[in-house]
Amino acid sequence: MKICVLPGDGIGPEIMAEALRVLEVFRGEGMKLEFEEALLGGGAVDATGSPYPEATQKVAREADAVLLGAVGGPKWDALPRPQRPERGLLGIRKDLNLFANLRPAILYPELANASTLKPEVVAGLDILIVRELTGCIYFGEPRGITTEDGKRVGRNTMVYNEDEIRRIGHVAFQAAQKRAKRVCSIDKMNVLETTQLWRDVMIEVSKNYPDVELSHMLVDNAAMQLVRAPKQFDVMVTGNMFGDILSDEASMLTGSIGMLPSASLDANNKGLYEPSHGSAPDIAGKGVANPLATILSAAMMLRYSFNNEASALRIENAVKKVLASGLRTGDIWEEGTKRVGTREMGDAVIAAL
Ligand code: IPM
Ligand code: MG
Image (cartoon, rainbow, N blue to C red; front, top):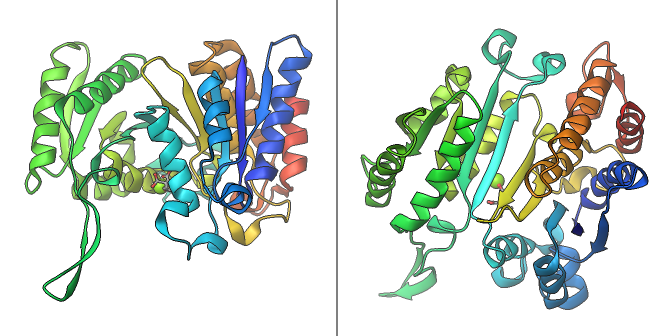
């Protein structure tokens, strides 16, 4: 199994190092893993002028899965848009056709106090956000900043065709079948035609899944319900932009975005796996970042791309054990627990494995 490793920028290299050490344990036990490292994001721009260089495209296309740290940082914010690190991320998603982004938000019982919400509101939380990742306003044309009648005009286009909606719909319903069998589709159909189509197609898709209950919610209400009564949700399915926003919101219900992995899959379960958080330039290089989201992303990779549920569970259980033992990185630290750095957290997960 060939894994393309993209440490990226900021805390990316530090957290990736820990995920790779965890995977080394499995390799030591005989799992056939090959790693090939490549550049993505700001580092890639510095080295080649492009955030998703050709050499990386080749490695990523030939790999069975991609493991990514994080990209971006203030150093590259002033660059022209095509050279920004984020463009590298959007580029690889589009290039590999990774249209299905799975972002679980699970509250580990040990972290109930790390959430800013009352423990009783979030205890037992287990939501899966299924975000469409290669369409919507992120990629729609026309786009750009132009001058019209002497005024600057900024323009982006929100667009979905029914096939794009249908295929993400199937992913959501199939995920729900393995969970609590409820899908809530998020749209803004009271205003946006694109999302009227979204709702219509979701209803059509639902006919294939009589065992799954479909409901609909407007995105503004969904944002409110997520903090009011988040446990009402099982699977939430939504477009690229709403999913971007709601998944950050959902992640914080769990105490820290530093805990949450994600998987972005194509139609054949080739995937890119990355923590849901960003490159955290403010703490980069200090050895204090939480590596658990990246380690849990490696677990998702074993589950979805390599079909190895047992090993995925082993990693997830090791993480639970470490949390139960009271070790915490700064983002999830609270009185009475032991503060550790990135490397020590990695060590502890490996020991628990
Ligand atoms: C995410 C990030 C990206 C996105 C950015 C960095 C382009 O926020 O993965 O959620 O908007 O998709
Ligand atoms: Mg985001």
